[in-house]
Length: 323
Image 1 (cartoon, one colour):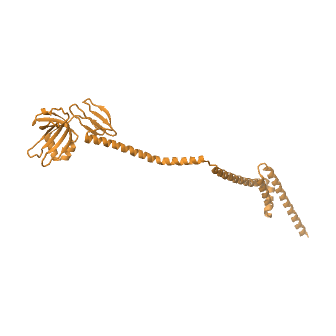
Image 2: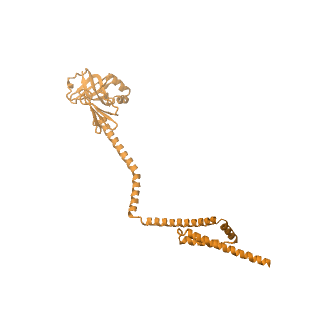
Image 3: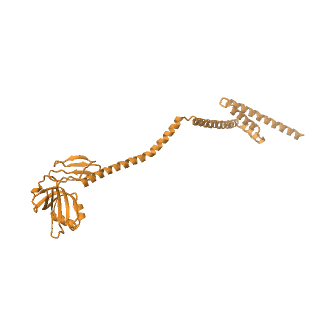
């Protein structure tokens, strides 16, 4: 009988504990609603109610633990519930923001105007132009270098081979020797000699080329010996050089305004004829005496090698003669 009474009392006490838990949960629910009434929307409130229902449906062990936490430390229990609701609310806000951002991005894509597409095309064109610019610069540089090379080549050939020009050089100085001039071009210099009685040729070289009207003096025998030793090397040495040659007058050609001087030996081993084209038509070469010593100044312009029937011949241009 006593056991039945005790069992009844324990079940009655347990019912009271469950009622107390329900009351506390109800009070906490009301408190949370009041606390977040202004901030929570209907969706969050329903979630809070669901959480309260889940708490009430805990098993006996969890109910005792919940009761213990509520009775012993109600503030901690309340903060735990608030933290859970806050986390739930933050998750909802993040999801809403993500949805809004996706909607806005879709709207931005949909609202992209024709002007935007034109700007994209413009940017693409600019990128292509930037890629092409280095190629254009290289092409321009190549064309400019080619033009410079052609200009230098034309002036060099005309001055060196035909005594013409220069065509692409600028005159920078005139000498008081009869009108000699210096010309400067892109990397080269030309000197056009025009002495009253002296040098009248043209030479081309680098910017370091110097004005020089002093002829190299040499006798005909020395020239003959040098040409006999090495014809090609000797000609390259004296080609375009301004010489004063001491020799003997061999022949006069008044029709062509030429005189011939040179050295002649018996076996013609060292014989050398030097043909001089006079600088002036009125040089009065007819007054000169054949087989007499003569001094001629002029510029070396050519050379003919020795053959079986002829001796070697050296040619001078723009010559002046004195006896």
